Length: 142
Image (cartoon, rainbow, N blue to C red; front, side):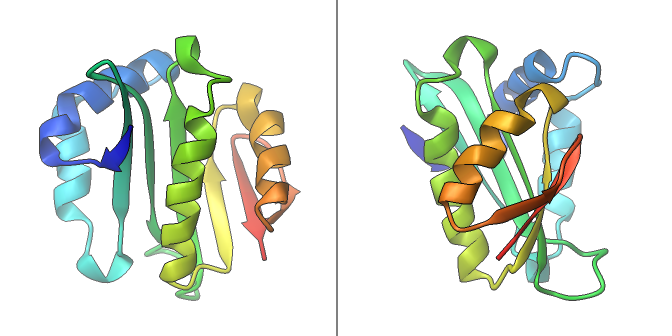
């Protein structure tokens, strides 16, 4: 089930992201701060994927406050390693990309793990975006 994330999800999302990005320190307090401090004009939204009451995926996206134009957005997506290839990432991407399209994003900077870039970029081309750089951050452009 995909649903909008709430502040109450901060602990479970932090645990998921710590599992996915084991080289980073991610805390519930940091997740709460990031959500609470996002300016409304950036239209940042996030979603969680749940299976059996467990958060197994998370997505976030909004307009990039640091970009020179307001049609550049950022996106992040993570799926627990034990739940990959189950359609969770695609379901999260569908909700996330619909939001980004709704807020006028034409260029999306996607933050990802280097080992999942190839899998993600092929599905995003199917969504009408063309990747034009790869690595830990890559760009999709319509």
